[in-house]
Image (cartoon, rainbow, N blue to C red; front, side, top):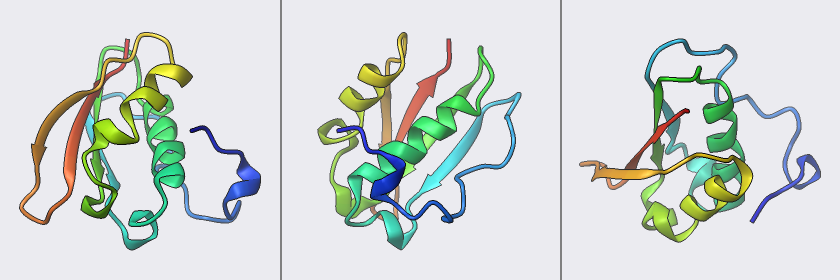
Length: 103
């Protein structure tokens, strides 16, 4: 389920513009993600890549995409060695929180 930059607008705002040397949350709940699991995966991978080892990132995905196990977990494992996504909870707004520890 990987995507290329040709699949999406290269001028789109990045999920983050810095490397996080702490644990943080990436907001993948914006309307642009509601019907685009490939974009959610791409930006989730960018969030992981912008998190220093020993920290975690909470990936908060749009509820319309369904449970993240259905579209996100395998993609993360296939693209980055050592990742083991862990479901945290469903948000009150309908989204889902997945914790990813960065080895």
